[in-house]
Length: 145
Image (cartoon, rainbow, N blue to C red; front, side, top):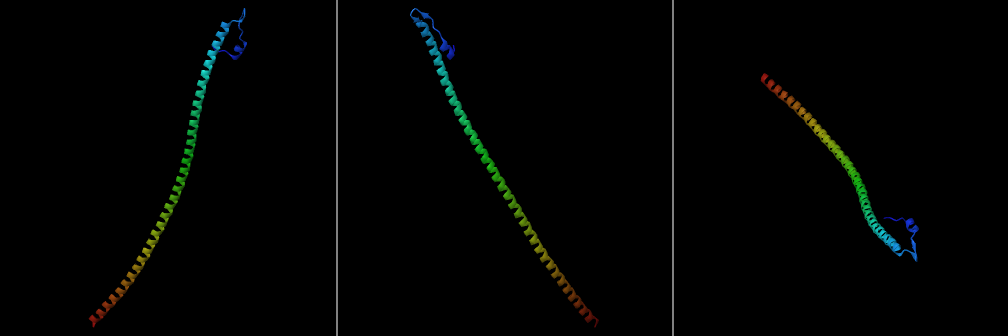
């Protein structure tokens, strides 16, 4: 049975010939002591529960802090990875463009060499043709004589 502080304060004991009824007072104090013992035990239980919950709260706050740090680290790593990937992309494109320019330059050099060789062969052909015609002309004249 729960007794409010006001009930305890206003409790009136019956009076007997020599004052209060000792048995009634002792019974009341015994009940009050039992109630207080229960309240103290309940209070201890609640304090223990509160400490447990505070411990759990601290644990979850630590987890939250760790998760925030992990998230921040992950975001920083992603940003670094993106930056590195962008640099690598630019490097690959630059390298490919340089390689393409080198291939075009070599192809143009080869084309120029081939054109020079073609021109040389045309000249050689023209010289050979002229000499051949000249020789044929010489043989024709010799045969005509």
